[in-house]
Length: 307
Image 1: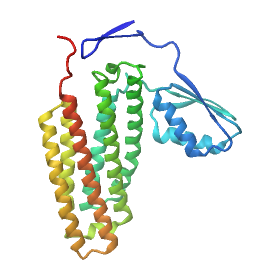
Image 2: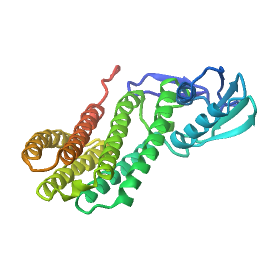
Image 3: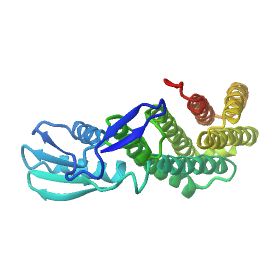
Image 4: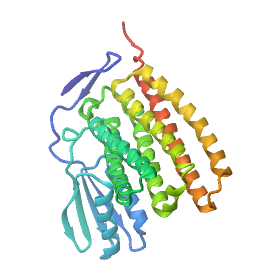
């Protein structure tokens, strides 16, 4: 047994060492099951922390098998098919927290998201279709890391692993990081939205009077995201407060930008695209502010029950 001192100096007793058997579950899919339903049920079991998932099909269901395999490829890390028959597929999650802890995964997630933001902004000034397509593709990596981190946080909440096993100090941090990782995932979605908008409306880059303003606004937003990342991993409350104030200022600047877009001579299609990009940049700043607020909460010491 392992005896661990908690932040409030209480003691937690947990089994010591590795489990002899992986956590296993089964999923039975009927003939009328839709692919989306099958994927959601499959992901739910992955997130809860099961290592082995046995999927049984009422009839040979090639469409459902294909959907689940595609979900594994696009949405999950370290999940492999270890057995397959006409009416059954067995998959196992081989990735372990000691190989990629939640904290390391979050660092990687925020680093990828940062590059997605910067590449999208750079393409406003110098259109680059290949770079924009890569931004869209990298969002899949961000989504994979998001689910992988959630899986670890849930495992810690259920007592399947110790918080220290996933790079955290206690369960309080796990609750805070659950909100943070969702905000980062949403930021990645908005960077992807910017890239997609530019690919669908390439004439946006020709709005010469507005692009410099949008680029400057984007650089300010990216700077706020970089600061919130630094504040988070160092638990720097002072810097987190700076992020919140700067995000508020950027929100006001977005309103001024919208007025200039409306009063410009841009075509309706370009004006809508410019507003979409500006709105997504504002949302990135707001999510960065949300992360900063959680950082401040986590940086405050826990109340002590004893002493």
